Length: 243
Ligand SMILES: [Zn+2]
Ligand SMILES: [Zn+2]
Image (cartoon, rainbow, N blue to C red):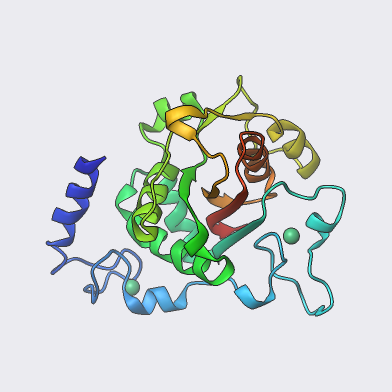
């Protein structure tokens, strides 16, 4: 995807005169969100989250797992982190990124994910970055898979390969939106397969799976299950935001 990096590179050389995507004031850094808006984003307090997922634990210091993860639905991943809460300006930004073709935001969003991952996981152990694949229908509809670009930038920052085609969806799953937690889990489980071979050799590897928003964790848990079946040693997950 060298052509894409070239587009980003040429755009960033035109950074002067550009406005911040959020406050519309002149940019003070190389990117699309200014420092002040960055500092106002509702970041997740990584010191008070569930040991497994990105949910903040309210007030209880003894608890290490949230209600979701300590129940019968223990996720298959070894850890999941999110940079922000899915609210306010960042929510709109993610929706614009996902649905309104503003894919140039990927670099700024990936930078936020990178710093969150760095706090939560030992990122020096990560061997590869894998995006959650969208359904063929969504790719045709949008023309791109938003997770691919995030994964590509994260892989570059981590200095490891990106495996955009490692995961494959099985069959024609129902949309996750509009389903309750139990239905989501049932719908998502076994809905992914790891391709293995040249495109997805994860045997013995620690991998970082990339998605945009963490809702119930059902999709990421299903991806982790598929990757572990294919021999992955550890599966960490990172999303921009947690709903
Ligand atoms: Zn701003
Ligand atoms: Zn949890």
